[in-house]
Length: 337
Ligand SMILES: [Zn+2]
Image (cartoon, rainbow, N blue to C red; front, side, top):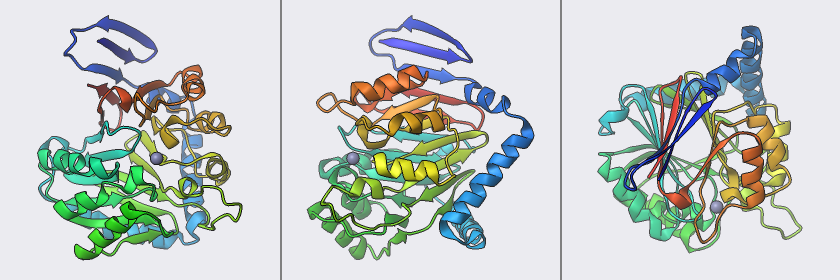
């Protein structure tokens, strides 16, 4: 198995024994990207992001109040993994085929973004239980396609959840219906996201962005993917973006919205399926790491992989195994086994 260690701009390749994990380490690469900007520019960028986020919801004060209110809730989280209680952000992206199941831990708080297909729900619940999670602070279902919402009913039935954030449209299919029923039975009222939401995940902060509108197009085309909630998690100088299954139309809308900033890690949208807006998205985000949730049977498109390679992003695919991310606010380490 190959091991890649990346420190700054040097890359060392070494062959490890077959049972060792393939690991990628990045030291200060994203920080270098930021240092190239004058400090004043960084501040201006931050301001632009805040005003952009406020513009999306039209009420900056409310967003701040939301963040403050939920900060205290997250701080009270119990029973989460001790390994992530020191302010380190830990992310596990599970190998569940061409589907998304992502778990984030920070300072004793737990966030889950999507739960894979129906058959994956138990794996997600088992993983959380194995990590000692007794409560999920925030469960985000990006959209209601079965490869994102499918396992969510199983998770909700087995682990208490404080908050559930959903896109504000009605899904279809048994997976969606089973999930809504499970929420009802658990006494959970989901929050339908119609404006940008700020959240706290322990020492990390997160912003969840909905589409500008949930208007269903009348051309009969598939629309769910573009309704995906986009979650950006920040810790220190590091930024991680989880882009659901957004496609061309939503990518263009997001890029126009003024909230997009370079990130260190991107969960590539829609399982790496190529579309013509991806080049612009990658140019805007400039991710050092690109994670794709695909499978050997349904791999990412070569054109997508090529775009990422041309931009120097380290690309990891769940087709090859679970992906683990550690971020201390200054460095990101990504490993796969
Ligand atoms: Zn999907």
